[in-house]
Amino acid sequence: MGKAGGGKTKSQSAVMLYYQAMRQHFGDPHWWPARTTVEVVIGAVLTQNTNWRNVEKAIANLATHHCLDAEKILALPTAKLEQLIRPSGYFRIKAQRLRRVMEWYASHNKAGLESFDTIPTGELRAQLLAINGVGPETADSILLYALQRPVFVIDAYTRRLAQRHKLMPDKDCQDYHALQDYFQRQVPAQAEVYNQYHALIVQTGKHFCGPEAKCDQCPLRGFLPSQRHKR
Image 1 (cartoon, rainbow, N blue to C red):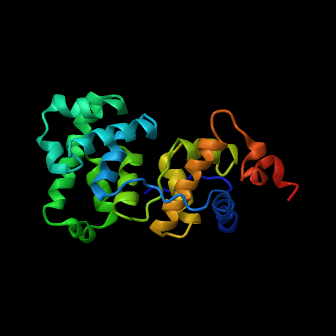
Image 2: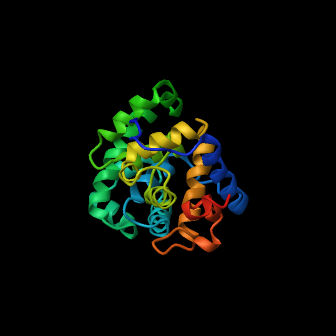
């Protein structure tokens, strides 16, 4: 899924110390907050360019109308689907994307969810990326959280943390596949570990590593470049 660019990187033990420090602070977040596989897939599409609270409102609307189901979403009139997912923002564009992803999901689901298990991760990822409007973060969120494939998800929180902690050269911190490859080489290739690691990064980003950093309170403060010489 791409190779990291040049430059010095941290050792595997150091990267896992990040994981241990965040886990000690936050515990196990058990992300993604959904009851069914299809709900995870829906959430992965709706969360593009919005916060999770807005996604929850849209998912609640779909649930109220008994539409947390691929076939039922596909049967909805476009105007009705747009109305239900309106809280997630960009609802007209997202309605089109959601239909396309639900068509993909339904085509596999007809043979039973276990049919996904027969398809290699790389092939599933290629199928998702071929859907108009689905980028790497959305595809990888579906693979990891819905299908339990060991694919590390990169988002804005991950990029910010990597850049502030100088995990890689700045240009590689902004390269989705370079940063993904970095984490996948440093962290054991287990879906549960990838799930928890990414969830912990999200929690750290929300509480401490936002646009305005709160480094003095962050569980990763001891790993900052300014602190390394003191260790």
